[in-house]
Image 1 (cartoon, rainbow, N blue to C red):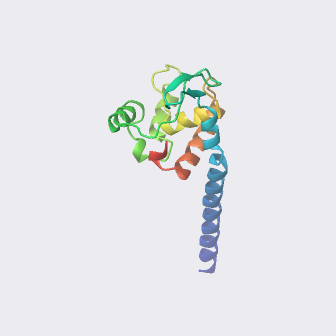
Image 2: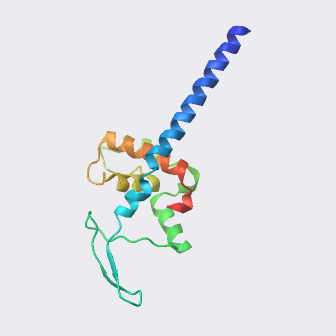
Image 3: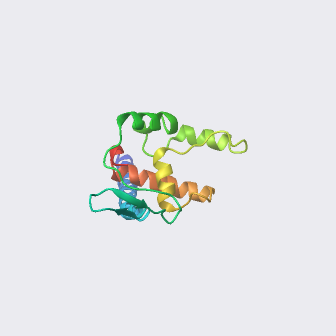
Length: 153
């Protein structure tokens, strides 16, 4: 009986430390994500009436600006096209990831969730598609999911 209790305690302590490690890492990883996102914004020049005169490309040669509201129809289309299970996973869709590994040689389907795509952009890994980058993006995506609500990004 004592041996069983000792094993259960060890398992519970290990589980506690794993959960604490994941949460702490997620917090640390995503702590600077908002700063990274702001750094990707384009320079915008306004006139005295707050009308946009010019939008300059950002460091990636893209045009990006923050918006406060996104129409529900656009959200629905984006989720339907890019990640239909967006509201049901924690940043990583294991089924899509396995399908992507299986079809990797055919380049048939992508396995990234919307959260992983955001992580890829924030990390600057758009051009380098390696397994290590994919693992890093997945870990970062998990951190984003734990830190922010789905409506935040």
